[in-house]
Length: 525
Image (cartoon, rainbow, N blue to C red; front, side, top):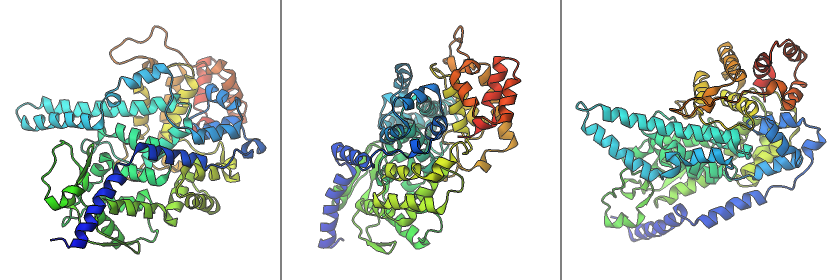
């Protein structure tokens, strides 16, 4: 039985949990606006350094093209970067938005989607050995929903003017990696990106971490749905500390992991919508929001010792406390800052840059745009422009953005295939550490051979991009006009003498396109 103090603590925790977990959207929106307001005024760092606009665009967007250059030229480099840091939402051309709106993941809530899939899965299980077509249909539906998620993500990468938000959305999707092959998370990835990652990609890190911690895709992938009092599962607790916040060898102990796992007991998912039977003394603490569920009967209400602090057992608010504590650790500030610097600057950013970013992270209480501004204003960032090797996603998207600028693709299938060929399908990394960011992971001879094949396919036009499923190719699918593009010609004038000489030797526009798209310079950003 609980003592009177325990009952009082649990009852108050129930109310606080509800406020914390289901707080008003207006409060959250005001907080997001505050993150933007704290950005320092626009300076002249980039203009003063005489940065090449194309190189800047290649770094803070998914790839420079004439459209993004016009966007930059309408203001100036420093103001353009400031606008990108303040950008919110995905604004794409109407024809692209229409494709997105037609997707199942855009029309159904995650709860509706999963309830339908669960009914389909259960029916398939009941017919196992009798009618295997139901199981195949279930798997095909999961694959279709995954393809919708990946297609929507790529369309936004190609067409959204808020390119820094798109880059940061992918960065955090990789940081909080969820492998698409486990359970039914293929059907959850679209919602994970749309409602956990995207709204917080340029917000506050605690809000971002919290959104991932409440999302059923994360709880399923890292097995926290099986984490219950008396049967502790440490998977999610370990990855929160090792990969999501503090990083390996940052001062926490195995005991801290175990205590965090205790904090996370009872936090899981409810896929069918049926409420479990709850004892009266726990009923006020039970929380279900969509597919997320906190079941107090599965929670360890004992006090915990975490990172030298006492976490009093009172339910879901324990997680709220530890997430705040983790985001304010100096180790977390350094770990996140180093990953950002590796993504945007170099494979081996200096300790001075990382520490400067970490200081901004801590002083701003996890403000992501403020941390990024510190990095973008640094001489190290400016000196690195044009040198960072493109991972497959950056290579594919940058090629499409440049080659088909002004044209609207109707089928992202070829792009998805190219990413598969290069070993970087979206959310295809099996372990929670995500894809590597360094050049050595992607610069193999085999990788370069595939990239040349992609460049050749692009150079002669890729009709598949303009062929919707079950439809014939458009009569004259657009072909890249790079050889006759003044913007591409201007870009090529900054290439090495060897590349410029090769371009001069091209015997046709298509051959010029191949040499340009497969050039060493197009492999870097």
